[in-house]
Length: 201
Image 1: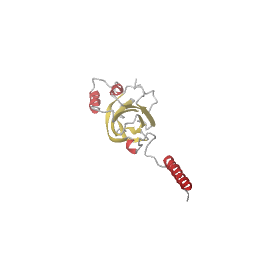
Image 2 (image 1 turned 60 degrees about the vertical axis):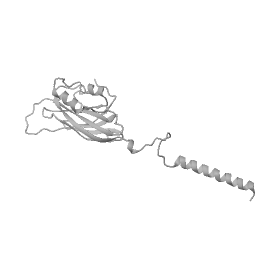
Image 3 (image 1 turned 180 degrees about the vertical axis):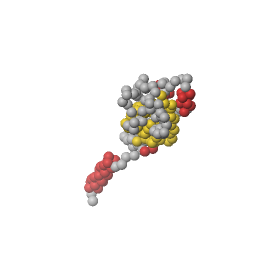
């Protein structure tokens, strides 16, 4: 075989190898983005732990209720927003101190607080419970329900607002949005959404 033919065959083989390598690079599985960053499940936030605190009920209509609302939620990601979210609590009441103790030392780099409020038909619908706290598709999700009172109890016929706050620790970056399925005292359910940029009057 002539040297010219061997040189031609070698160049052809190298060209085919380069084309195949390019195809594999374009179409094969990737472990990261164009900058080499790995997008793994380890980066997706999950709930590490959670705790809730029920707050005392009141009969004063809150700013968020126009008479038809089922509930409201506030997602808290910092100290300033925390102060604004609980501004309605009377400083002279032990309840404000209870909230302060409950959220004491919270690290908003790894945690979030979630305030949920709802309403019931009489004074015995005075407790809101938050449960099923989880992360789905990068959004914090939870269920909140106004507890039914004992049917044998005598209850003052007055519209009553109840609330609770959850403290949630995460593995990974905490979510900045929340979706809560709220069920009020009339057993009406609606989806309430909250964002860390939502205004707090």
